[in-house]
Amino acid sequence: MAEKTQATPGKPGPLTLLESKRKGDLDLDLSDTDLRKLYTTMVRVRKMDEKLILLQRQGRIGFYLSCLGQEACHIGAAYALNEDDWIFPHYRNPGTPLLRGVSMLRMVNQCFGNSADEIKGRQMPVHYSFKDINFFSISSPLGTQIVQAAGTAYAMKMKGTKQVAMTSFGDGSSSEIDFHSGMNLAAVTKAPCIFMLENNQYAISVPSAKQSASESYAIKAAAYGMPGIQVDGNDVLAVYKVTQEAVARARAGEGPTLIELVTMRMGAHSTSDDPSRYCPPELLKEWAAKDPVKRFESYLLKNKVLTQAEMDRIAKEAEVEVAESITAAEKNGPMPPPETMFDDVYEQMSEIQKSQLEAMMKDYKEHGVPGAH
Image (cartoon, rainbow, N blue to C red; front, side, top):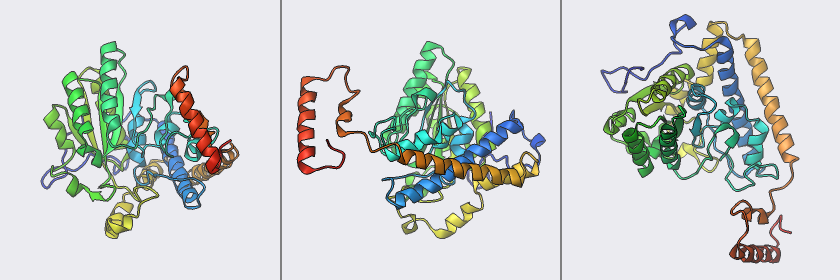
């Protein structure tokens, strides 16, 4: 298991690997093909984020959250899982579906809430759900996914499936009761659960210093009787290594692990937010030098895994993919009809639902709400 580290004077900082100049210096089981896939996914999600933020500013979608600066956290962690392992994400994990083969179009359809949206317009944009890849529905309330992951992991243990559940959340969620409940349940039951705490320095406008008095978030694991590991969240290889070790421990029946990924949210909390009102510009400048994509590019170039020409081609292909997905999504028709919100609730619609549907449609038609018919 990677060393337990804390970001305090006199102690080593978060585990970092990308500063190594040679692949042979790293104890990793990743081939050049693996490294290219990790890099390509990070570039794809960044290009998707950049374009969809612009779409929101243009009024073409209603809301957006980006993972700018945090790509290495969830992509590196997810790559350590098997495809049948379950993921209980938060809304800054858009790279995970891409990594598991979900098309960008499926994700863009959800952001538009159009007729092809698999969630039928019932979720906010960027709140994906993909049952076919074991990617649980994202919720806006903080921390709900933590207890869901712990319960699922315990069920996996009882069934003896050897699967693990991984959940990710921000530093702000550590102040929610769900954090305590989930961590405690998983530790007591030795459930195969991996807790990924993305410490991106701000929970909307609240800095970490006002979120917790602990010397780190990783140290909180000790109170629950599980290992707590702190890792450089902008180092995709370090994230992969630490997660891989935690997954192996979970599969061996040794219980859960809390991993603190030290990173920085390099933008607004959402398109409804103005980070200039609370985030010092010098802090953003400091973290810009630690950009996870740029750092990985430097490593790949040094080790001749990719050339600059190949990286330029990957970036261009990602831009084309985003543009084509948006064009297709805009052709997929309007939002689902309002009456569809009553679908999929019960197998047979109850009498009270029928009366509610009738009253709702009457109100819609009287007030001329767009899309009503």
